[in-house]
Image (cartoon, rainbow, N blue to C red):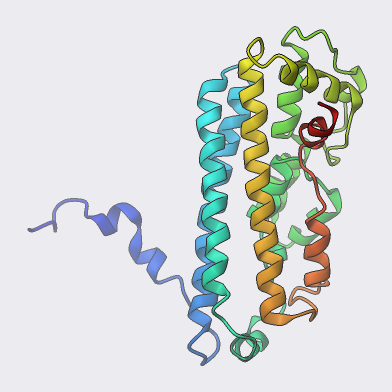
Length: 267
């Protein structure tokens, strides 16, 4: 029962640092919920980034089996984050109003990890780097991710070298990686070839379905976000100066892997 000379559970997990990282600024009881909700979300996002960076490396190396497991894990993490909104939704408008003045201009909009997640999934926007200029290390990391191929870019490059009859347009393969993914007819044609003969192209077919699973989970996560925010603050302006619910609703229209959803209509 004596662990004084060996690594303990708390030592391994760094619990002293984690459990002492909550510093409510208001006298209100409910601020602890608000802090823990967002801190745990950032930890889950950190794990998603860890998995997605490995997914990108495996796709680049034509090593898809490990990537399938990682993509499935990311989708389940997003499911976890969907249900986390159930907990925050127990905060009522008066309870949030009691802590809001203490948040100043801090906002989830400023999460550099969430921005990195958007970038690696292909929803890129160079203008968003300005939000992170105050922290050079974060700005440099996001600049690097902005200029790197997204996971979907790597999937399309894999399609191009897979011997499909439908050739990917050279301009799509050479597209500027700093801009968001846009629909390309040649990519749609390639995915249609995969889906019309899945047994012949099973690995690509499974990759596509894993990507669709992940984007679907991401859409649910975004939807629960906007629904929870509307429930708690209505249409007030966000603390970081965004349009709040109106801004979040626009994000619901973002499609990360456009051809994978367009092919459902075309089949």
